[in-house]
Image (cartoon, rainbow, N blue to C red):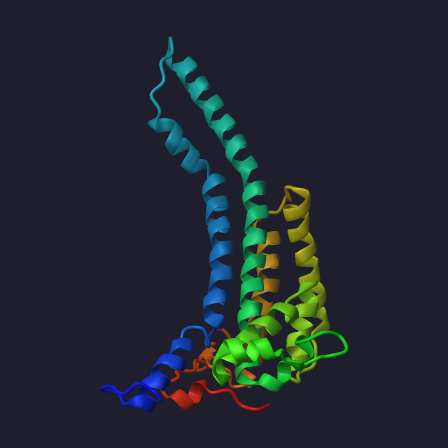
Length: 266
């Protein structure tokens, strides 16, 4: 028996068991799309500042130097400015490498959130991402018992299937999304996405400092933004609740009813 209260037994059950998923069961594609942009803009602004002669000159003018005459002070100030410029602009390569890693992490998290929401909304589509090779789609009794109710079970399975769907190369992760949504794969984008992952791996696994300027990093951001945008469009096509103004001016789902959160059977 459900505990009765001001909301009534049934209403109380819905409130505790369904609305609790509200914050998790929305694919906020806009957040991840703009997060990737923020990562790039942070690097671009830093690059612009550090390469500005006026910025260094203003800093040099603010320093108090002691020299025997004006010529010595001017020469010393110029040397300090040059030394500082070389040091800081050299650090831009480190910042660029870290920015690539940050943008890649944004794609990874966005992809996982995409799959969790799609699988919860369309449970049948997670079939090949659950169970072992010869037992695809098999759900263990322990999962059913521990979940307690149907929607908690779906949520748990969706998280597990999403973890499997986001393994491997970035291009494969995106290709699976196209397949699940019944859309043709964008081979050019998946190939370019794999190239970005290779750069990311060189930084993370080989501690390599990549020499990338703003133009190169802008190109990297564009690839990742296109990938996140593709996930947004696919989710939008599948009627997955979320925020998608990054691909459609009116592409924001606002779920006002419990029915809007319930999974379908596709």
